[in-house]
Image 1 (cartoon, rainbow, N blue to C red):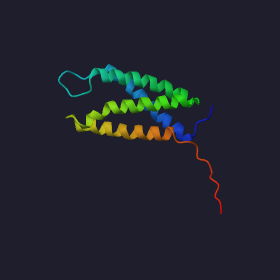
Image 2 (cartoon, rainbow, N blue to C red):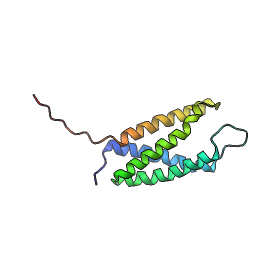
Image 3 (cartoon, helix red, strand yellow):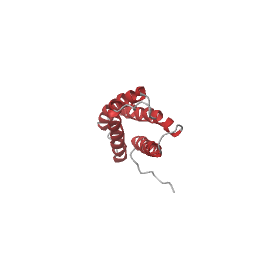
Image 4 (cartoon, helix red, strand yellow):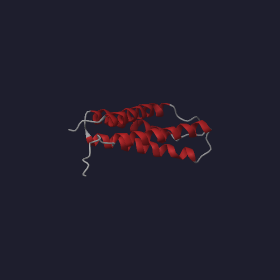
Amino acid sequence: MESTSSRQRAGLVLAGLLSATSIPSMLTPTPDGEAGPPYGVLVLGTVLGVIGLVAVVLAWRGNRGALRVAAGTLIINLLTALPAFFVDVPVWIKLAVGLSVLVTVTAVVLMFSGARRPVAVLD
């Protein structure tokens, strides 16, 4: 197994935080008459959060397959949040989704950034 670089560990920390924050989503359903995600999306977010958190732990220990699973759960969770940009919801929700998009992209990029290796320069 290959060890993770500090950049990959930073991405895994972000991925772990994103996964952990999505776990309780199904415990707070959208009240009737208010704009928000359907309950099925909230359940999916919880399931993806649990899978993502387990994958982050395994990836931290060097499992490359788990790294891909963690990234996949983040991306699918992100895709379920994107409709917030196209419906009439409060601005703070759109800002929160925008922030989560930035953090998710950052986490995935960092998770797949390998260790920097010196490159030989030929004269």
